[in-house]
Length: 148
Image 1 (spheres, rainbow, N blue to C red):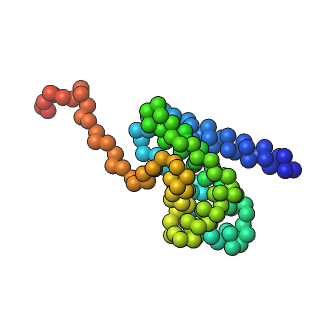
Image 2 (cartoon, rainbow, N blue to C red):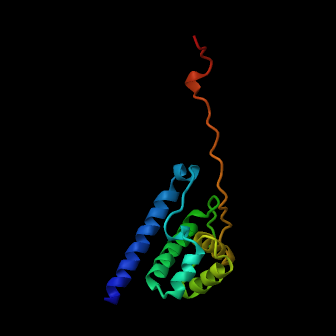
């Protein structure tokens, strides 16, 4: 049974990594507004409640999400040909850091905690501020035409 669980966890991680790589790998993806979903949008109060209730499954799913987010950071947070510092945070590091963050910031999203942890471990500075969409250029084929 433990072997199947490990294989299942590895498969989920590989799928998340492939999805992140596919999503962030194209220039079109970089130009559009990227939305984050999954366990990271949950509030820190839930993370703390799961700890108190000894709900290991919800916390494990959140940690899998966090590892996928960190893997995406390692792939996406590059500048030109320079790679970003790759962050590796096993559960023995991630759990106490996320516990501490969520205890101090119960109203924040888990995403914010993982971003702060990634930064504190030397990762790229991720800006979570929503950006305005780029201005639309008028279509060139309509330039110079007069309305009748």
